[in-house]
Length: 598
Ligand SMILES: [Zn+2]
Ligand SMILES: [Zn+2]
Image 1 (cartoon, rainbow, N blue to C red):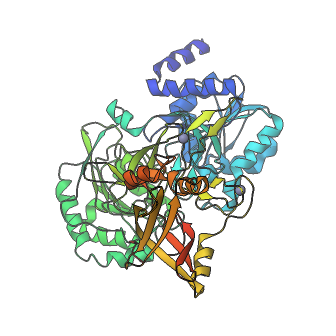
Image 2 (spheres, rainbow, N blue to C red; image 1 turned 180 degrees about the horizontal axis):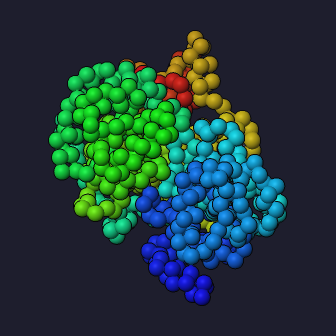
Image 3 (tube, rainbow, N blue to C red; image 1 turned 180 degrees about the vertical axis):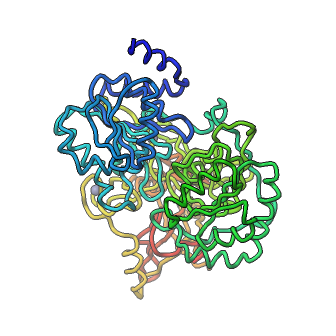
């Protein structure tokens, strides 16, 4: 009878198609391999239902980890609603039990009590798994996930590890996985998880009606320009710098708040994201006292819970916060998001906007206004690196070797044609003979090893093939600048012409910003010179997107628009002329390049 009842309750939950796909992808993946995996599902996609289903169909012990007690409780409650029993291991919930086949635990409670986990576990599911590798966490919690995994592995070497997250990319810590099932890799460093096996894009969730449609409008009135600020390594901004920048906008904040009030007349709940604590207090001053509240990182827990409760019950309309309500906060009625802070990545932008996309009664859309004008597009893919400058846009650059379509930051002209891209290495992935994933070797920009000729990343210090130290361009420049008989040309352009006497010979002249120039020749009839030209220029044709082996001077002159100029040219004085000793391409370092503000 009890079994029948639980069956009936379970039947009430029918997984949405993408949830079922995520479950199927997990089962398929772990049938093939024990390598760790990640499922990417946006906020509001019902992750806990996917976890419950996986726990329900598992035949052995499984452990579901989360970093806060609220998530442990939520995931457990969802599982119980299937009519199934599970243990809770969380000091915050005053339970430390792992007797059932399925245990929901908080990482902080499980890690110090590993001796109680002597059973054979077949699967660990980690919710909000981007936290596993987060570097800005305090050291203890950073290692707790790893401690738990290695302990469980000592009981079962074939332990499977699955992570779930809405934000697989984080500024500062990078991508949480290495290979995506669509056939590309992310990042060259060792990511915490090996494979992304399923991803549901936010845009598809909206299109299929599982999330509310956002209405993004441009701020009609004055807005902030945070473009001059540069983010710290972890992607955050220095609040003193932000505050001093905001003092340049004495009336802007007030005008923005007035507009927010006007536009929210018919709205149910408004979330305002402020840039700093001081900024948040200023914003509060422009809203009516009885209708708004503010949550800061320093707000005591009880007060914070009370405020959130008031907001959820619509006793207050405006909720102002500084970076604290980007995750784990859920008020479905929110139908207006006002960003008055800079955002550093598409992921963070999506995460913030996601706060307003849950379905709710009497909610047709969610108004989104980015008063910081970050220019992020909700539907654009995450590029995976900081936006190089304010006019950069994601561009699609196909790999000449494997044809994979890379997404890099770049610049386009008015017709959307790519003028420039900042990509370095192709992210395409192919399976090798042993069915192992291999990232494509093609590099759009590279530093060549002086020892073996291998192409390396432009920031590499040692060759990835022979280990030999790669000459640091800053050292080269520093040394040349200290020499009397050396010239360093900050190259702003070059011209290519046929030699006046020898038709197979090519003359290239490099110019700096002030008109200084230096030239060199390549006789394409001589194999050595032809090879050198192609090594330097052929490989880099059209910014590495169209590598070409040039045959003749005539061909080069005809296609000279395709050549990529070096950033610096170093020449040494000979008796009667300057001889080019070194050309630095794809420069990245401390010296200013031509046409680049200092
Ligand atoms: Zn490729
Ligand atoms: Zn080498």
